[in-house]
Length: 546
Image (cartoon, rainbow, N blue to C red):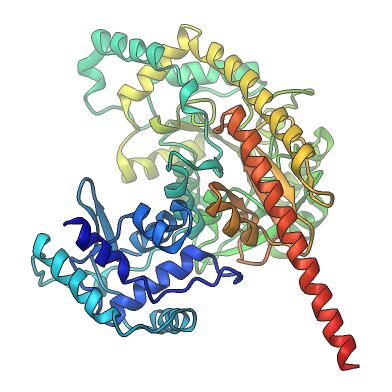
């Protein structure tokens, strides 16, 4: 496609006028505009969309905004990207109530243009000639079952990958700190030593030396378990899914913290699920509310992150941990303890886990290597009573047989030489520094009325904006200035207006932390000023009417 044809492709957006004062994010407006072109027949399967950078210039928005709009469409299966070629229409939306509303929305914010059909026709002709589409007799959209997804996460995953974006969105380790050379040597050693066995099928429960290592590690933290009480999984997300399969039947209810880890929401709180939400305060899970729920609704299990809670960062006190265990024993409801942030401890006394305090086998503990530095390896584990692990083994065998033996062996090799402990000490020091830098920058650049906590560990800081602002409103403007974060609504079971947000400090460099917080502070101040002026005008108008 020539530069002239690319310009024609971008020209199809000439009739789009973004409403920059709207609470509807710019990327949603762009995605709705594209859907409308599809419904109207201007865009057909095989047509090429404008490149992100060119469209961003055309619409005078940050490239992140266009990237997020395209990610939204791609997640819906409407477009697909081909490396080196561009982004193409891969399916058309059905004219359902949703798409009709999307079309009406776009028409409400667009300027009508007589030239749109001709430029659209140019786009169709150019893209169709370069991308022939083979017709398929199978109408997949008619037989595929609906799958829920998190729209915020989809967009932020794409936008965070942009090099010029400062991302506080994801609780992930810093890639530059990965011990790649040491880990490569660990892989080489285990391949030379037992490569043939590691490339064959193995035990569902996991690689035996790694199971022994995990048991000895947990023993140092006061958790006494045997290898047959531990199951290796493909990370905490699979751990939650396996636990749901063996414990939560149709019609069963669970008790879950709110706000909480979005992955737990996706597993336990999907459409048709039954659940009770327990509020989290500065002291952690509200145990008074939990006891009422246990008494009246008899849930099947309790999910909690008691140590460096995600997203609020709070840590449950020792007395509260003991009371939670007492409630679980009294009402005979098991607890899932998500202990994934335990190793990222920066200051203050380290409290024993619920699993270490458990005297009655009511706690199922899940953990992973993902937060200390190996998210791509997807290795986690579950520690639970033997009968529970036996059932989990069967569920995992039915799912994927076992986690990668080579990966498990490499992690064990890396750990047994003391390299894991060395790496954890390194990242603790670095992340504590970045946490303090972020808090210092917030104190310098955020206006009065913005509140936050100082977590003793973990990866993020929970921020509460003044009541008149929403995190979504701030995100819409910050994304256009190259800064993204996770809005509070991402961590709640129901979509509501929230003035809370989570800022992760582990993935951004110290310089980017300072610059990103500075930009956010300016945006928050600006939005507060706009809101004050709007309120003053409304007050003046009302007085004039009187």
